[in-house]
Image (cartoon, rainbow, N blue to C red; front, side, top):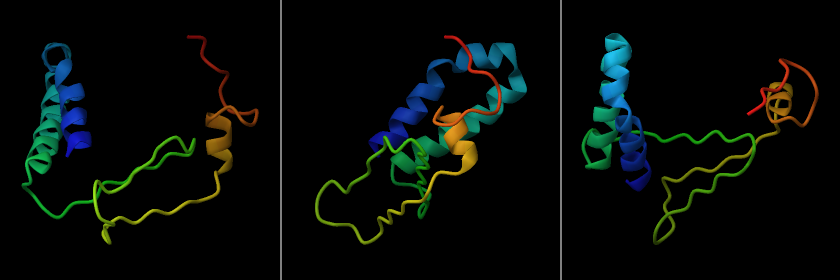
Length: 97
């Protein structure tokens, strides 16, 4: 619930500017914000949350008892993942930031 609410809040934070800059994009983002809030409120079930984190920095666990609905899988990073993470040269030059 907290992940969905926070994602909706983060998207909504810049929604007025987004709507002013590009109304079509703003409307599409609003659909996502509304869907996230509906799901966080317990509406529109069932749904899946998929966390794909090639860097391996994410961790998901049930709040209480083990949850048989939680499915965790691991995989080997692809070449594209390795390049994007900076573990292997290739692709576009890194952006200074």
